Image (cartoon, rainbow, N blue to C red; front, side, top):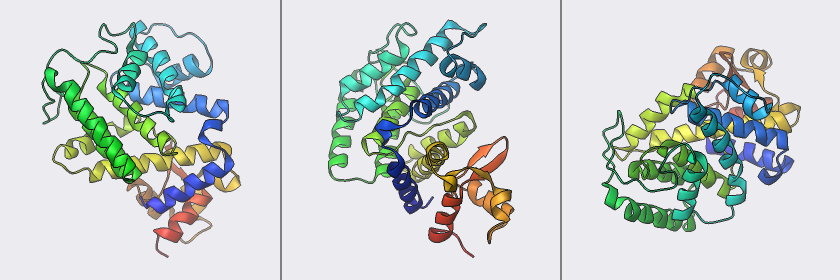
Length: 298
């Protein structure tokens, strides 16, 4: 995805509201969506409707493991707290606090570095031995700070940082969720909104991470940009103008030079910022205008 398009969409969002001042209902929905997605791809059994009921409506849900309910409530609270953390450096204490905040009363070693050697299911990567976890994490955060100070590009740095964290795999369990919280903390520190990895993204996400094991982060960078496009469209649909309203591609195609089929292909390829709703791609007049200006062809 053309990063200029993302920059323009972000500029539009930030002229409407700062990230710190997003309306409460918007931030609440974002935290619920992020929590459902990050937990679901790790095996949490709560459905999106159940997460909505629990987190957005404040109602109880029945017949679900208490562990899954606790993870959901505690992750949502941890995610919302990222806004308060964005002005602070990311340290070893930050990482431990995030893990403890999500997994207290769920995992016996919440907030503790792993004391066992682990393997990543389905991956060719072998994480470092347990005694190397703290030195590896210290080195990762030191390099992140250096690259950050040197002005490394946001998505390149985010992909490198996220893959590096998951490669160390510093906890016995919960590395994916903490890693994605840290990734979103990175975006917030760079004044970009959080992204959401949802169940339909799981295979693409894991494939990009596996390719990173071969020292190729290009797919992960592209994936993060695509997710950011979705996040920006979603937020602008809620706080933007009429040009930011999400509309079906068929409706937009009837008023422009592109067919709905062409737009659908570009959305599926991650070139046109778009969100799939009930099987149909949607985008905004603004996003389509930016695509045509910086990427598309007549």
